[in-house]
Length: 187
Image (tube, rainbow, N blue to C red):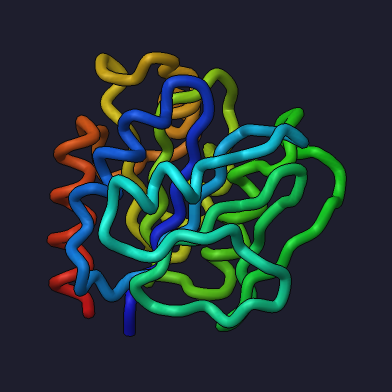
């Protein structure tokens, strides 16, 4: 079974996200889901990641069947959740003052995929992702956060560390290495 990678980022998280995406090999079998705090503002994140990485990148679409080796980005002003084999989008109330938010994605991934989930919290200025990280690790998934010294805005990874005990905090380059190694061992 392939891994499900869920990544949360806000202010200062684009650079480490790009470094992670650049490191994913073209034969990467996991499915990757990204939530960036953009609110209702237009996003060009799929274009940026497509130019920098080797995997296909699109906005997630409601009801879309999840494919291996694909990166899905939450569209502006929609929470992205995961059901068994499909993406679910909604405009339910904001979580942690934002929509899209990481916690709905992380919690739904944990509930649907359990120990197959790898949760990653990158730079950002609030506590989004911390509760979702707890859900992931409680179900046997792997929790990782960006190194606080490297994060431009360390509040999000720090909140995840305070609320839960993810495996470790790593620089963006080490996060990429850890993800690739983890998925190679569990595929």
